[in-house]
Image (tube, rainbow, N blue to C red; front, side):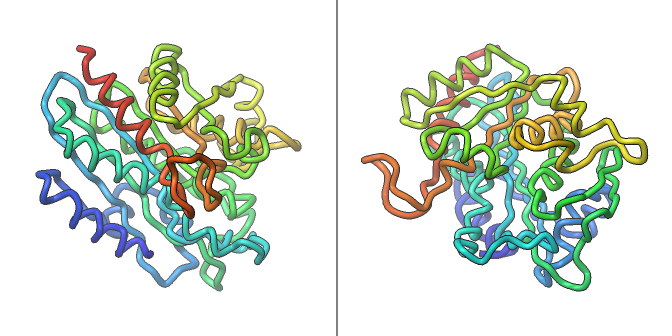
Length: 305
């Protein structure tokens, strides 16, 4: 699957249900000054797509879902080992879960208003690819040193988080196959969650217990923010200082771009991507988790005024 194919599938699935689908191109992203998003796509001949989907079910709520949409991730110049690289076709699983959630909400006619954003790119090595050490500028004006081009998901999510502010959301949730560190930490049993809201986490946890998609909360401590921001020549480093805590540092990186004074959840679903069969109710192959949980979570939050 390519960014273009993903976007076409979204149109085919959602427009018959009355959803609005906007397929934004490279020029649009350039106008928005999405330097993080555009930096990842430089090595590929496939054009990037910033996919924007609106479900308008009514009610007093306005939420934003963001899904990582790297349709193939070779790691860029910081190339991945060849073993299991084919599985990186599933690095758009966060985006797929978000698309599935919008489809579910529209099919169930949930009384809520949800905007879904999926930045779609390929991350490949080539003569035009972003190089380790390059410094780019995100949509909010913050400069980022890209020290590892395989830490690309956080770059495209950074601009999507900045853009989410334009919709004046009650809360924003991003979901991504973001770090191998999360898979090391909790395996294929749960999705890791970072959030600034105890209330939202409690609702998410209960939704996950009901649907079979467990979650587990991790810290957003100041120490992790220091590890990605305390640099003299740029605002943020895309991997941060020191060893260990990779998932926590990635979340701290995203925190620098999340809308201020708005409840925010970051879900790292690297462990539950697949392809192993991890529960009796799931089929073989890529899992589609935690789409069920996201649908129930939005339903729960839609009852609040």
